[in-house]
Length: 138
Image 1 (cartoon, rainbow, N blue to C red):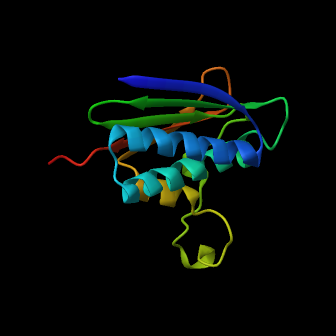
Image 2: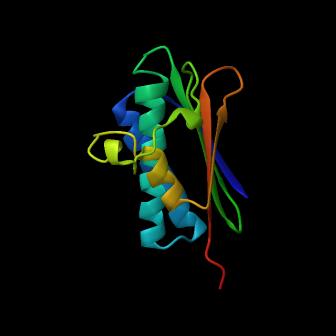
């Protein structure tokens, strides 16, 4: 088991760093290129949500990243220091009135690309998401 923990600024540059770090860890864990890109897209979406919606680009608030590689896959936890968020408050992006909206599809995309998705209040304030992607069993 390998674990990586880091804290980043609330900037879009940090989003790129999170994606690169996690894709690198996914490669080390043995994921193929397609799976690495799926993980990268899901993680990028979470990091954008943490910076934009959670921390609202606030320079005093950080994005927290934990990545754990195991024999069975990878677990990624991304946390923000924002006001908190209720996943049940998200409108259905597939509802006819929402199909043309520019935002609101992130959680749906994330769920499509990972095996487990959990969003909960972060200890100390903010929101934390936990993503798990399992290696395909032979």
